[in-house]
Length: 192
Image 1 (cartoon, rainbow, N blue to C red):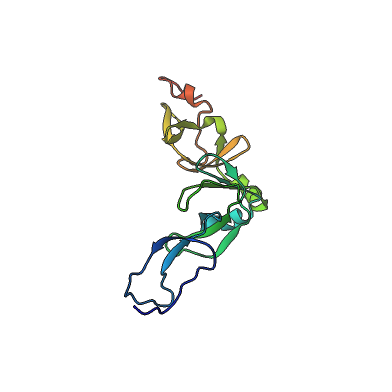
Image 2 (cartoon, rainbow, N blue to C red; image 1 turned 45 degrees about the horizontal axis):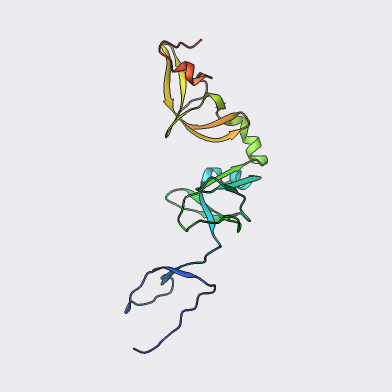
């Protein structure tokens, strides 16, 4: 077979995947290979388009690794366009060299807080006392007061704000909750 071209990566890399086979036509824009550069990883978070300004203004950004360690990204790069289907914006966070033992594709958690936009918006958020949140395995819930006592309601929570926790879904403004979920869960517990 005749030697037609050499492909040279711009960096030392490992080939993760080949996207073409011998005989396939190489076209502009068609990926031939997926390369991985060991040592230089980044976290990618998909931020809802409605929260891009608040997230970009965050002063404290932490990436929580699978083993529980927290590291600060070396930079922050918010992509200029939103995905038209999911309405999210990609946020790239290069990780420092201290973030060892990671592999491409692993899940990490990104926490962003602080900043002028976040502080201004904090008054409009629905928050509950941290001790009112009940966590049992995968369940995160609060006890909501009704005429007949308390009912357990699953909630989705956001970041902790001092001694308060933001409730993203599952609770409406004005609903009364139990501050002590253990006592509220006892048979016959009534709201006062």
